[in-house]
Image (cartoon, rainbow, N blue to C red):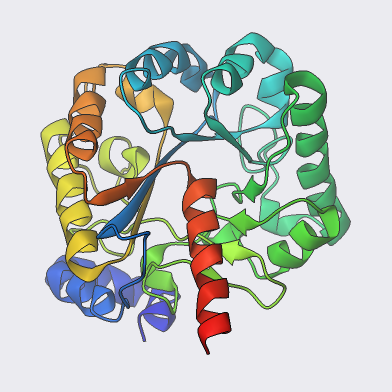
Length: 302
């Protein structure tokens, strides 16, 4: 039902205005509790390095994460790695995960204006493989995760076949929770690639709870304080249901500029996670590995 509604823009806009809570609770009620190594829920945070303005915020974000036991994931674009190799090397040096985010991030006015969905299959495959090659050559890192640029309408099931063809990938994180049949939990595609959906916003359930949505979207915005509160709300919802809470943010949105959050707001989010021992918190690939291992255990027991 919800996945079908997501495809109809006027209907989802109407529901968002009239009954966002009904929609959010309705789709989340379908989520089945999962085994997270004895923890109540799983949480992962990733950052998309899409634009040049994201680069200056990497260093302060890394410094902040050094105070916590868990790591984050960073979706990296090949062209930005080439131009800012030192900044991207620091991500690896600090123990964080790198996610393949294509070579040129199609539909990016700074790098490539073409939409990812308009590319041929071979062009898409080239975007994926070239990014991985640069990660390996420049950073000595081989990504196992992938994120479709701007996912949503740019993402399709073809991506999973391309990831299998490229080799080395175990998961994608390119879908919105409400648009999945799993109601936001991880699930396996037919070729074995795991999909790790991104959390929906409780007040705008057909949008991701990401920093762009909260601070730069022309249709819906939240204050930094509301952003932190919504994050905590969705984590509590995941704990109550035993599910995944997977988030992605843009580094530039923690610059403290007018209308944006500051590092203190990101720190509030990380503090809230660090203080809860009943959460499994880690890189997206780590959460995907736990899901995969539990899936194997269920097959054996069956």
